[in-house]
Length: 275
Image (cartoon, rainbow, N blue to C red):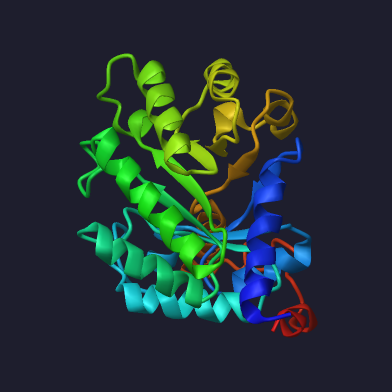
């Protein structure tokens, strides 16, 4: 099987996971080691988180990491992990449609089989016009078809993130329906945080919906029951790791080693097995 066929198979496998009527819990990782860890844990697919990927490499979120560096990270992960890999592409790292197409082609060449693409401007205070965002989604779909890899497009809407839109639910439904028509496989109303709202959205769209795991909607079995296709964790795996490290570090500064020895650590053998 050629590399392109293998990648196309991964993309189709990833798409099928959204249609299986079983909740896809998608872990968001940021480097090879974190990707290897979640693969060993038994997850079916993986995705980068823009915040975690940027911060762990010394950049602020918001497309501040150079796209060339992001591509290197994607290649490093995709060439060493067997799972389908989706990439948080933020707004596309592009100022125009042609540049977006070029970026998608390069992303596919480095092993990506899925993307997140969001619909707010750089300041996260204003949304792109629906027509403009649909043109971006159409460009991604066209490029993926031309590359022979049926990339899974997760179209994010930031309506609930902005908190500035009246009648946010109906506008979210309108945008998500348009994004699906343009070629998105899944829609992602980030920060939606009520089960009733999620259920209403799923019923209206009748297509895969991704939600971010938040405390008010943390019952995974219930999310599956109301029809959510996919739940992602955003940057919170990195937050958990750094929270533990911060606690240990602050303890040592006070000559307190209790946090250092407060949990059973993964073994060196386990870490060696990952790589």
